[in-house]
Length: 240
Ligand code: CA
Image 1 (cartoon, rainbow, N blue to C red):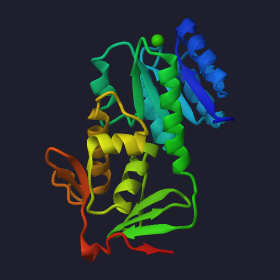
Image 2 (cartoon, rainbow, N blue to C red; image 1 turned 60 degrees about the vertical axis):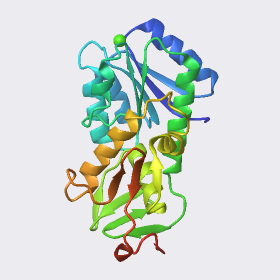
Image 3 (tube, rainbow, N blue to C red; image 1 turned 30 degrees about the vertical axis):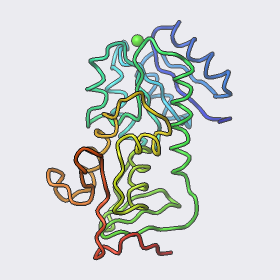
């Protein structure tokens, strides 16, 4: 976790410093921004791994910052901070592309755990080998960590990429929401599996022909989700 750069965006100095101290203790390099405008500026020049992003900011708010960051840098990790639990539905909404969130007041150790888990997800997506996995119209290029449908590149967040890789490597296997949380997020998420459902909804919008009637990502009622095993789609065959 050394040399990882975390951008902390929070206008309240006491919280910003508190987060900074705790992250630096873990060996992270921390850059601070007190506004969203400043955060976007910094993201342009610095190679940021994860952004810890407060929602309530003077000027443009955290939602807007999240959206702009996601548009420009699909592989950056984003953890939102919120003071209100009712914001969580919005945070997890389809349009923002958040990887995780924390409700204030939060335990700094928990934030550290979540950052580490997110970094593992981002790293897991870094070039592994030159393997290409094909499945029907889909192709995952593990080297460039890119995902294609019918030869067209589809932008995925680190979390979405991890989910799709898990699915395509295990066609036909039903995963519970808890299993997906464990395998993708890397920890038990104190019962909040909503984050899984939202990511699946986002993925369906990106990859399905008709996201209202998903074909590839099947819902397994009362369980979770399953990647359709279809032998016509050369299920799970690997090609170099
Ligand atoms: Ca704030």
